[in-house]
Image (cartoon, rainbow, N blue to C red; front, side, top):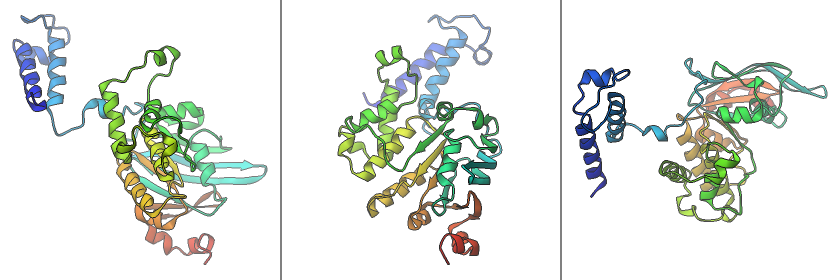
Amino acid sequence: MSNNSQLEVSVNSASVLTSQFTDQQIGCAEGVSVQNDQGFTAPLAKQLRDNVSQLARRDQVFEFLKPPHNPLIDTRHNILLYLEGVSVSFDGFKAINDLNLYIKEGELRCIIGPNGAGKTTMMDIITGKTKPDTGQVWLGSKLNLLKMDEAQIANAGVGRKFQKPTVFECLSVWQNLELSMAGTRSVWSVFRAKLSGEQRDEIERVLVLIGLQDQAAMDAGSLSHGQKQWLEIGMLLMQKPKLLLVDEPVAGMTHQEMDRTAELLNSLAGDHSVVVVEHDMDFVRSIASTVSVLHQGSVLAEGTMTDIQNNAKVKQVYLGE
């Protein structure tokens, strides 16, 4: 029997099992104790009907494939990340100086700037590795990241990819993604761990997204540099992040790998907010709709790549003109 035929049988079966309830009883399922001939109560019939109806739809993604983002992340103003008046000093050197930065929900933002501009320190502050001297950092309008530690920030939906890929080289690509999957990590849950069909589907979806479906059984240590970078991005995606911080993703890549990385990052925008720190201007030009230039710990300029290239201050401090 084909998958479509099986689906039709399931839908028809659900209709028969729930048909003895009136629409009014189904709609007011709470508190209704009447049962039909199959022993179904109205609340159970409502749940069954809703679940099967969802599976029958072809115009939306199944609920189990939708990222379970932190319910406290409030983006009603279309801003996912707020940095306001942020400053931090190290031994008298002001690495971040009254930084104000706003990242929209689903945005792909590129951050550029000379060495020492504060790009890495900015990401350290967002992820909780460094606490600023002053300022505010919020994920949405309800989660104050400065009151959370690194693990809490990661669990809240912030993923960070460092410049050097960190994968488990002795494990397969599939196993790397499996280990990175969001979920409980207690001792008992690890002993009892068994992948569900939905989890397998999610791993396969990410494999296709990062272009490593043909390397799923290969040891991660055998991958090229670019493939390791994609795998690490995939490992972050398994944790269902709302915000992705990506540090110099194309350093050391071939031109073909750079093109594939550009496609990957562009495909992530929309479902995720992606902040890319990069020095390769050709790569930035290929992916960025908005670019922020950092200089001496604050935003020097912001706009399209064309705006940035024509900005006199940027030419002076960044391009040396």
